[in-house]
Length: 185
Image 1: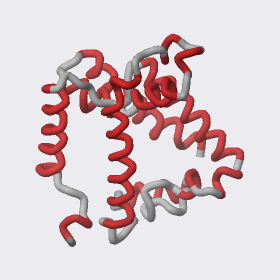
Image 2: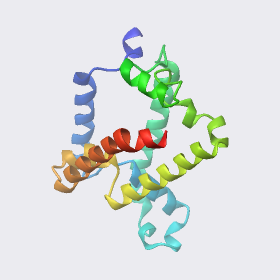
Image 3: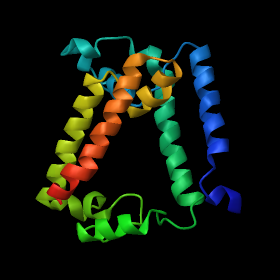
Image 4: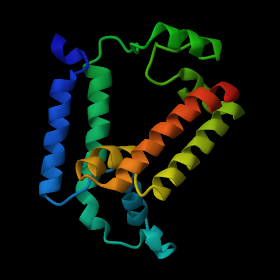
């Protein structure tokens, strides 16, 4: 059981992801998490008010299983296979985050300053989460998919738009963490 309490090395996880992608390509399917939001909105009747949601959501039921699997897998990983919830990150990064006001840096995967129940009562944290959610939603729609869809599925299919999107995601992430993040905090 000790083996499963540590992150799997790349030579185990990578081939497993490649196997899943091979199976999806073989079956003519494309993976992506943001497409599930579209499916859920369509299931709830959004197709009656917006043409984007007017499609046969039943053809995407298989992808909803991915969401359920991600939730169950995350729960198992966090609560059954993790001995220590601390994140193994560079001490300099922890120091920098502490200077920015994140005292929980390195102690958990999600900083309590943003993701605890108490943070939802603070206007700054709530504003950051709402604006971030809107930008992520807009970006995923504008790019025609999310990071998982483009980086895993799109690149596996050798799609040039996915390569461009992934490069954009990385540039945006670097800009956010090195320029905007210090300004916000």
